Image (cartoon, rainbow, N blue to C red; front, side, top):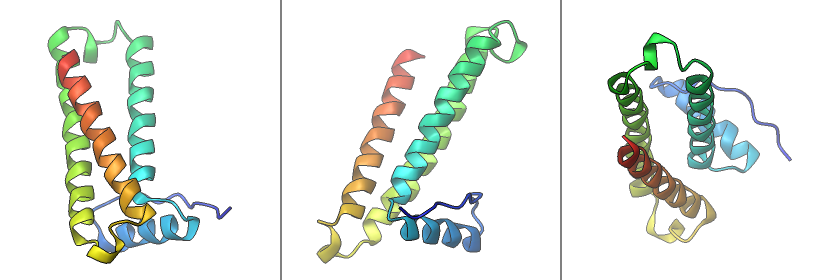
Length: 120
């Protein structure tokens, strides 16, 4: 299997293209990789929150809600980018695995947002 290279995701077009190339070379969906990253990040944040329950950044419900809001904003930004990607896919490729992966990622991210909003 091809090896993924670590790429810092940025709005800089050359970095975005590098990430796209790395995903393409590895035969994986950009959406799936970003979803995995966000899932890992949410898990890490959850672990940090649990370990640092007495720290000031999450010691009140309001502060925890604010942290969740920031995560939701990031997830919504990813959904917007993935939706734009889906809209650019030609009709003849809409049955492709890449399209399906991106669509599933958007659905999963939307469900994650709903769960976070329901929790807080």
